[in-house]
Length: 375
Image (cartoon, rainbow, N blue to C red; front, side):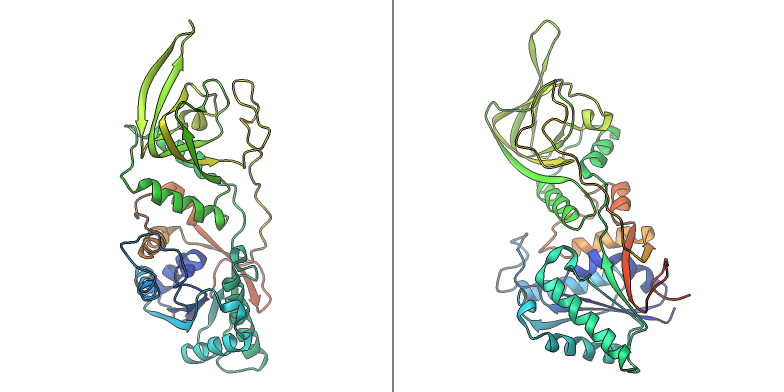
């Protein structure tokens, strides 16, 4: 394949979530690929203080973009000098000109950028989409010889995948009870939040603090959530038929509870009580209601219905299952934003989340298709 593929985004790391699998797939097939970031992402949150400071973050993220793209087989990356967080306030024509200059230099056949909603409404993402879209359509309208043949918007259809359920099923299959390393809770929290924000998963994500003696889950009530202990300890208690209560075990940070009932779609077999105090990551199918009941008679254990899968407007759905590990490695290369070990998540779950990438073709008007490049 001799085609040329350009991704136009707002920040380093946008490229992985929007089209990381396609970058790996088409690069291996022989296409030349390039990622253009309109900023260096210097206003992003520093999620690993050992990697960057506020003064160095922009340069660090520019380097992370190159490292992530190397994982995907992409050699050409570029970050422009626009300030992170300001794209929506910059004169739009300036951004359009920047994109046109890169298109004329790189001569891509295919351009991919955000959808008009910026994936989840981020103003920088929306501005990047508008600039790239205007640039491509203008060149096409002028019959400019550098005009790309195709323009795609990345698309994130709402998924019914529930991380809590998938993790519970994985946990019950393990030969030994799982306990993650010290940084596991932080990494899984980031992974879950990003998956939910981009609609890869439908879980309600929350971090809850429980004071000493609070019953976090109760024996006999329906199972609806999975818990990961981030700090502190909990006691697992069981009430016997004679009314006596026994302590089965004490659990601490890096351990899950609630997986047995969730994976088996059955009621809780024990009560879990905060010991001292505990903080947990909670993965639930819906947001807790203000009126939900507790105990054996609770119908939904206090949680509303999970988000349903919406109709997808995608014109193009690309199978990238063969490249999921490369995509995960590229995410991990953006360490200042996602200090997530590559092997954090079970392989089957990665396939569920990242095995396909969705796009809407803006130019030319599309039929339904399954590849970015024409046959």
